[in-house]
Length: 465
Image 1: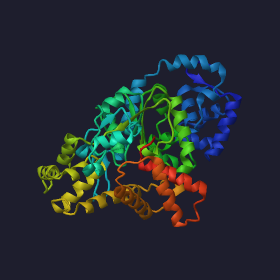
Image 2: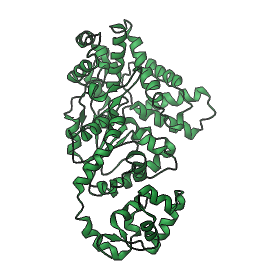
Image 3: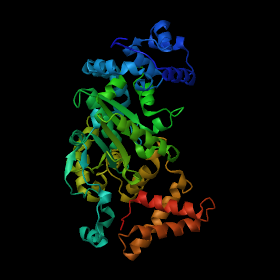
Image 4: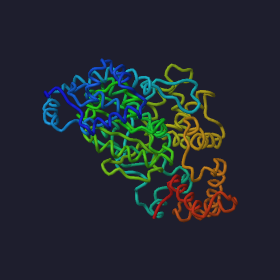
């Protein structure tokens, strides 16, 4: 056996044959897929030496680890051969092949009531990152009351973060494994798409291959594939060189929307991500998740948060949005400056988009500000998930959006009348428990009621002890 050949062990042959059956393949079909003759495929399944590259390609197609099925006598020559791989050439080859895929999947965005997609680079505004998670700040109620006045308590937390901000691209460069948390509509997915476009365009980490995975789609894929199989089949198919890219740490792996994975798929997906990131540790990983949905920790990932937009980012976004439109960006920005309470809403990219849509339609903001707030609430509670086909945890799905609005309204009225502008989670739990019990919902047992209260409080991101 030469350094250029590998052969299958007896145990490996059996695994390979089982894989053929599992994926409804024949040796002839496998040869046709790999564009080779039947002869080397027959050698593979009889334990005879096969060209190393073809050996790995066969294993890739059968979703087998070649290291686990190769005959032991071939292991040392294989290591020597690995060292001669021109990984840079492989990376550039893969990049060229997936460039149109990345551009098609990540090059546009469309949210809320946009009538057509917008080019990502036409609207993108640079993202800033907070090293300290806002939900982990330990402030007492007295401290919070000192930070705001009663007349503007309802805007507390909007565009008020004073911690140091780090440009998003710098954060990715700084941490090899990054968990980006953020509020609904904070721009997490847009930022990940931007990373993919910048990478494939050679503007950011041009030495890597961007791999963009929507975790919801991965979780719901037919036959529940592993992450490597999903990437190979659904994203980079039919490029077998992806294993070399991953092994040499040349991938920028972008995992979007961990919070959008259904509860029934959660444990499996978490396990897949952990095992994949541990198996290919040399690669760059960036994952996003809604901040209030984080109930798990990835030990090797650094957690950061997407910061609200500041004045410069709001202006940049508006200039991009209204470019070449009848409404001038200067008009929009001037009206924002004249209405500080509406401007506070613009700190959220999603709500800023809503403001732009409303202003573009009528040339002004609604005279009744409550109408605008209602639209914002509808966007966050209804449209944002519905337009993307996302279903949240099953444990409180019987609590409809209308009932959630009624519950929040009741809590708001009661606490406002008492002057309790801030309250602890256990107080909120009492309100929620009482509300659910008064509904007389037979589908909620006591255990389910407690879980519903707990999860709903997490979504509210209520002050903790």
